Image (tube, rainbow, N blue to C red; front, side, top):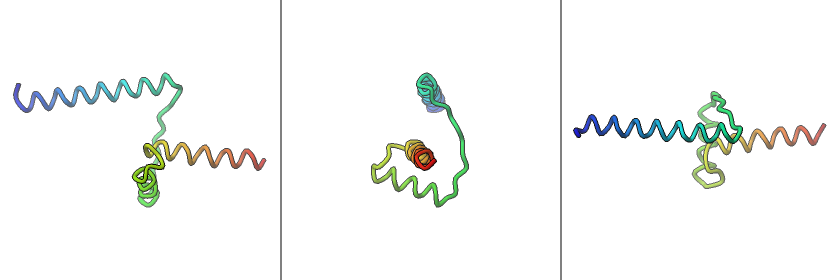
Length: 76
């Protein structure tokens, strides 16, 4: 197997793993939602992930949204 074939094999494996992960998330009732963020917001998210407060940007965004909506709900 040459280097080009090995690279193609690795890429295919990565695609399979990603598809498997997405399927598992869908089975949990999750949906994917893409959003545009400013650079400063992304930096804030990255800082929180780097310090270990959140496992990922997605986890930080989900926490922030849930917090805002929970606050609004408790005020109404």
